[in-house]
Length: 202
Image 1 (cartoon, rainbow, N blue to C red):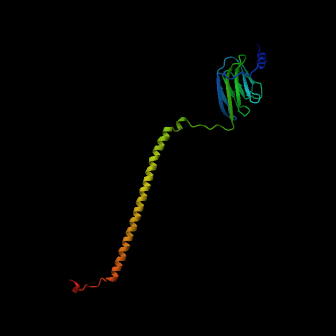
Image 2 (spheres, one colour):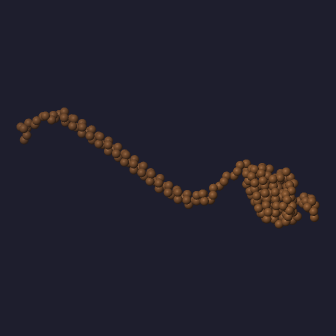
């Protein structure tokens, strides 16, 4: 059968089959303008690529691949497919959606691809080695708690010492002040030049 006749025959077939028996299922998040390359293995030389139409809820043929040559059937032209891979370039919002790669006449689903397009590049996660483990976080918390307790105890001790010194200084000033007043009082009523009368002694 000639490729042209095969193409007409394939386009006349109903391509709304179930996706439950797909050999491979992929979900890819791609930044707008990026490229995604999905590898798989499919027997046969002719594949059909369908895209799910959310409005009509039906699968629509968009590509037929014969002997590795991609033939576009619709407006989406940045997708290519062979027996080994599904490739999309310069991803746009029009490209997002669900795709099904199927064999030509057997209607067997080879791969189901859910393509999600982001307006900005996804945030890169740090390597696993750079992510602290839960045990390391617990150890850090344990080490931090004794330091906090020690600092608290030190503050309390310093506060008590300061209060004690203030009270001691106040008591000493009070004592010396009272002694000074007493000495002044004694100096007024008992002159240091006054002599004692011997006759008063018994």
